[in-house]
Amino acid sequence: MKVRINVNGNWMERETRPDRLLVDFLREDLGLTGTKKGCEEGECGACTIILDGKTVLSCLVPAVKAQGAEILTVEGMAEGNKLHPIQQAFWEEGAVQCGYCTPGMLLSAKALLDENPAPGVEEVKEAISGNLCRCTGYSKIVRAIQVASEKMEKERR
Amino acid sequence: MKWIEYEKPQGLDEALTLLQQANGRGRVIAGGTDLLPQLKKRECLADLLVDITGIEELRQIREEGEWVRIGAGVTHGEVARNPVIRQEARALAQGCGQVGSPQIRHMGTLIGNVVSAQPAADGAIPLMALEAELRVVSHRGERWMALEEAYRGLGLSTVDATREIVAELRFRKPGGYGETGFFRMARRKALALPILNGAVGLFLDDSRSLIEKARIALGPVAERPFRSRKAEAFLESSGISHENLLEACWIASEEANPRTSMRGSASYRKEMVKVNLLRIIKGILDEIRKTK
Image (cartoon, rainbow over all chains, first blue to last red):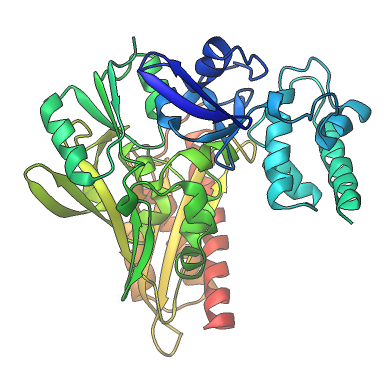
């Protein structure tokens, strides 16, 4: 069946199976492998994307369910060679180790800052509570999101 | 192949027709956060998935006189943030705000949380204390069902998701001197099933010195969300004093029949029933005296 989704600002249409999962549609059909597959049962958050403004787990969404939706994946965050301020902050603050959770973390962080540009530490922790990281111990990730929030706030002024 | 066909109808009638045509081989899907893992593991089989989240009339939270109605397409996140729910059913907003993780709350629906029939579902436990009712529709017609009747056993609903759709639920606003509260104990704040959770609704008389009606729901202390009816009856028949509240919590603990599992022992859970219930009941009483 045909699935048509707006991915990172471009409408994409592919013929795919009705039981294709969105994560596989993105990775296999569109070749966007930034979105990671971890537990495949909704526990780890590695496959997090933003769908119509809200973070969801692409391993639990049938691709056809997202018919006509707007999706943001990690590939859509940077503008050309210029990293998104959240990506820049993750890099500068050392919030990336193995990197497997990073795409999901970045999107959870972006969804938070889109809605709440100046979150407190607890709000940051809640926003990334569905994204597991087994390397960093989270403190650098939390720090990076706060740094990004401050930078983005300054840029807006 | 996990399923063969996927339909996302825009109307309830169309959804029912699709299910009828599939004759038992179809299944309702809403958020999919429980169903997808089951389909992947082949714990559940379906040829046709009928997605009801595209049906506009099921996507609403409405106030109607003394009732609040929530449609089948409404997610936990939408319930937790809704101003009417936060005002009229604090326990439900709190419970829905602690389901799974932000992503799960953006996907999973409150009614799905009920139909999955887990004994300690953070959305269903407050609904038990609110004595919610479900509107179940099928090709044969529709009926209102008390939430308690929706449970058949551990993870088993009396609603047949291959033929029936729970279109919406409703509950009466506590109103007057009524208030609800929720608690949850878990090893971490997200993506961890509860060691124990519970919701309480208390309704005081006009003098605010007697409990007219008490509703206590606990999980996982039985195969299904559990109403502590003896503790409720005790609260309704005795005055508000520290000793009486303690006694009610002790009764609730005696009534509860939790299992020993990886997450906690039966005796620990019974002890925690007392601690958490007392805390939550006192909190509700303070809230009523302060704001109403």
